Amino acid sequence: MIDCSNCPWLNNSEYMNKLITLQRRVRQILKYHRFVRFIKSKEFNEWFYAPEGIGGKNHKLRLEKFCNNLEL
Image 1: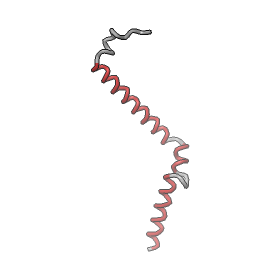
Image 2 (image 1 turned 180 degrees about the vertical axis):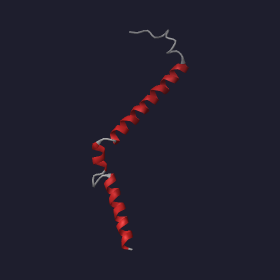
Image 3 (image 1 turned 90 degrees about the horizontal axis):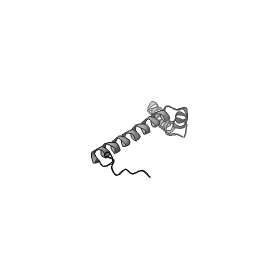
Image 4 (image 1 turned 45 degrees about the vertical axis):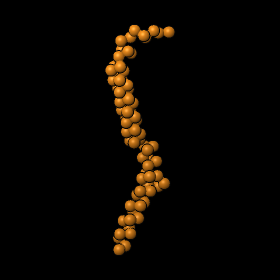
């Protein structure tokens, strides 16, 4: 077992706060990059723009509104 009781870093609250903040920030950056990579993927586009997907339903509504405005 490792004895860390004399470690100056672990007993320094300022260092620990900075370390926790850094870890939190790195996690956020990783989540962001994973999300961006997912959005650019073929699987996301196929899901989003499918007729029953969010983008497909939105397009149907916009097309229906456009057609209704033409009839007036």
